[in-house]
Length: 518
Image 1 (spheres, rainbow, N blue to C red):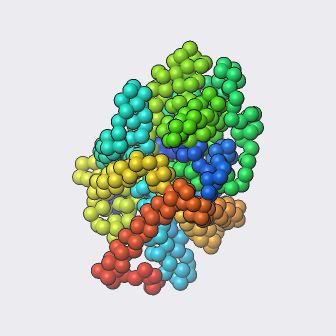
Image 2: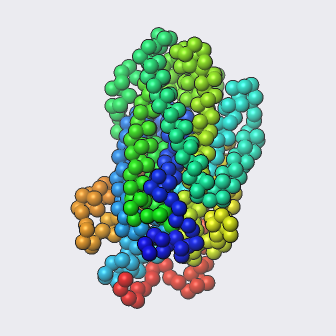
Image 3: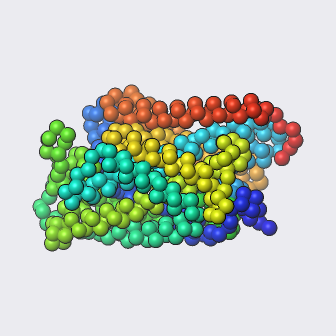
């Protein structure tokens, strides 16, 4: 019996996913059809510390830097999944422990538990905050669509929508990964078709220029070339949100038919299709098409155009699609915007579902390992899913979604909190890859030292950018960074308290004393 199948049987989960199924679940989390719509406002509104200048002209280079970071991290995940196919639902949490306990020298084994606990903390900060961010985005999207029909809803209805959406996604997650996979597959096809269509008409609009517009970027080269290092780094702190998810398939090892073969491949394939192909094309097209004809109004009533208007709008992509449709396609802008908005709503559903599925599986693994409350490690008798973890995820996502709809500052702060967890998790995984392969006979200096080493460094740079630059900058950037730090601190304190209480109850220590070689 294969190691992956052994793991599956020991957890009670059923191995039903092939390469397509594993890849689709990862692709669902990197939903390109959703993120161009939901993050363009944050990216357009971003400024350098102090608010003295915008970073929005470097949106595309920021994505490229985040993509390079993601590929370096993806290789670490892929290589770890290759040598540890028995990880099951544990993913990065399992990798952290094995990187130490597999060492021939038993003195290294003592660090295994603290490594996996820190990794588990970062994974939960990422995977448990992320769905709440998506829940908030869905509430804002629905509010925007209703507003186009003259139904302007207030803050409280948006909060209600957030709660109901969290319950809906949790219900789908509860019913099992096969249903989630089919949902993700259909939605991925729909959104990829939609984004190719949008990219084509956006570039056509720029070339035809039916409105004699003055475009933000004078040339195609201007979209691509960076304007400043700080701008690129700051844009990357947001751009990582649109790229995370390639690693999520490593949490489906217990449900993969051939985890050793398919999971490592799926990590890379998902990032190539969604990140390298979809995002670079659609973000280029959107930035290429933004001009002075995209208009809006600031909070104080000041008229805005271009990227300033995009930063002030709750859905700048909707405004841009409507402008292009009216100018280029004979006045069909409203209908085109509604159609694209529906595909975005489906994509948000898909990415929220994928994030929930990944998060609860890592929680399930930790609970079975008695590093989280044991009820979270229970499986539903019919659907064979960690239902108690799903219920907890629904509650957390609903609360975060309610907070997120309050303002763009709170939403950005929560987004940065999720990204904070992402950068810590990715940095740790790169480090565990270096440690795991250091004494193995299949060690390759490029794949197992240079690439993960650069990935570790790049993730640390992103953390410094989020914390250092944001906090010292003042204004909204400081508030957003403090919100992110606050979320991270609360989760760290809660995790620390649980570990201390668990150690007292079980007699375990944080740094264990090894008794024998692995």
